Image (tube, rainbow, N blue to C red; front, side, top):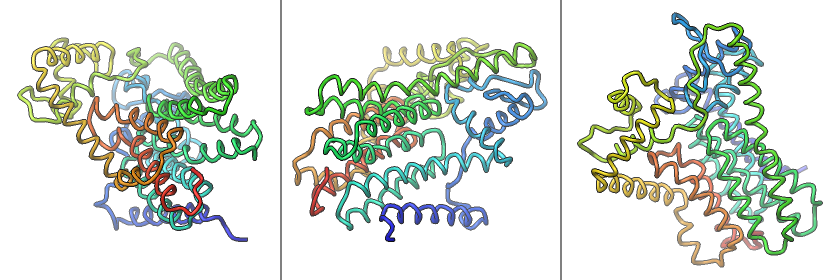
Length: 416
């Protein structure tokens, strides 16, 4: 039995990933920033220790301090990493770094597998498929260099080709209604999980899918509402589960004590990064893309402020708005510079697609929703700092758009 080409591509990518990890483990590629978990690893280790000692999720433990425990949301609202990595570590009885790699390398592999499967089912031309598998592997390796909560945007946007294939099958009457409904419900659930890792990670895919559904002309309004409902009904589930975990943990804290107070901030700290993002251009204010700059600035006004609190975010917001009022040309220059850098990175991933647009009649029902997602995922990088971490969802959508255009131009029989 001949295996489909996308299965071969997934197996090859998996073997490549394992081989690279073996080389890394033996110190042969130490200078390459692969498998580098970044600063969150130490916090994850404290969460794993907290889970081990208290048998409660989302509580961290520190030695040689009093109190020993602290609620993990004191670090921000990116709580998914502090739940799932310790959970995997507990289940397989390994150390934190290995559990961290298993979670995030698994996310990268799953994203590649989803995108490759969808492309393999949609495209017909073997040459276009081969190039697509290779290009998608490059995007997946970008996520391996990041290896942080930001790659959840890569995972959810990788669903696009597979969702489109299911939609095409349904529109052609080849599959029953239940299959697109299930696919949409699973998409909503995956977006729900992604949002617990990074608050906006799952929202982009929701906007793309809703835009696609609304632009479909041959679907009755009630049927469209049913599809949107299927997408949204599972979106709150992960947040509800985390709320239950937090309540259970808070009850344990109330009974046992020895825990720092909760900062009571459950939304993403926005103004910290917006303020520091001004440091992308040279300035007389000493602003740099470093957390310590923001913390020190806020404490000039209120020395007792804790980091990552609502009070801190309000203080740094006030400083940013003061700069806008007193030196708006500097602020405008910083945002223009960030916008241009975002466009440059977008061009790198979309590249030849700019010329392909002129060769085909665009299917606006496909590419307008993609554009919605691209612009949405670009916004954090423009507001804060244009690094690939914040752009990963947008870059993946640009790459998928390029592959769709290639299929349109070079396939002998297009399915787009």
